[in-house]
Length: 64
Length: 362
Image 1: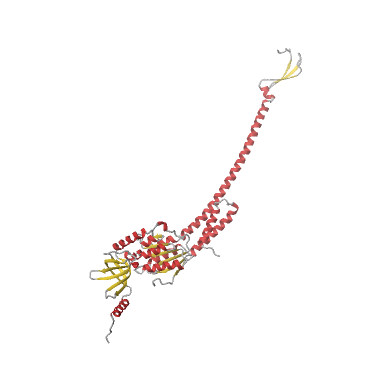
Image 2: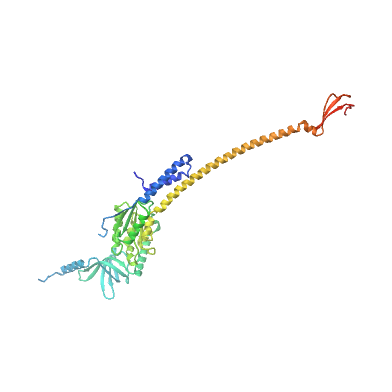
């Protein structure tokens, strides 16, 4: 299932946190940095492309 | 042939004609001689300089406080009573003019505040990361256009369900109430935005309707209002969970800014880069410190050996016979007997000598 944009942003935040945490390993940093950069570019593209879906409800609210 | 009616039929015929001719008739006038009967019915005269008509409204339909002397706008139907008196049956009423609106507003505000309808502890925050928004507004209104424009500029991927209602006039409160009920019962929206652009006090007076204010306060889904301009405050605003100063402001409060979010993404990636550099510096410094420590230890051992060697060399130097000779001593070689020849070595000479005599030292 395709992830929603908010979920992707949350995932990126977690990836960024790894670089500040105890689990940081220099050997893995390059690969993780590239993965985070790729995700950031994906989010940026999503943000630029995503449109809102506006639906006007057909119900007539003027009728009692 | 001339039509002949019974009295009752004639009254019914007149009422039919009146209802057909004046459906949804709106009249503006001043309230006078207002009285309540049996706690259920409200009677008053509506007058201007030229005339006066009797009006009637059931008390449950009186949704804004009114008083004698107040100028009001009423919507209803003219009617001939069974006693032949002309009366205007009111379906909706609203004060007119800034002073009257303000007075009615203050009276209702006092009543509803006492009931705790506007209590701060009842306010719910807007949900984070919204995906479904309900909007109640007129799709033809400028305020709605502003709201949608800002939402589209700021964020994407939202499902926006719009209930089209009128946003001006006596019919507004009931339409908005029906839209609120619809969204509460038949939608999955996470927040409801009631949107209306700026207008005069008369235009916005419908948002002080008691039934509407109660419906907003009772909504299961959090409500945000973006009604009028910054300076306008309606009772609907006070009942809402969150108040935006304008429709555009409501759009800003409901959505994140994609431009800021993209900047944040770039900042995050830069932060990672800086953090990796900082981690590498840290590890490099650690290695440097360890190297320095080892070098220092090696130097210390070398210095210790150097000290020992210097000391040994110094002792050896002190034991060198040449140094002893320099101090004035001499080496004597040969058998010590009178008449024997001996050899004497000083620090700079070898001397041949003959022993002339020997004396014992004490």
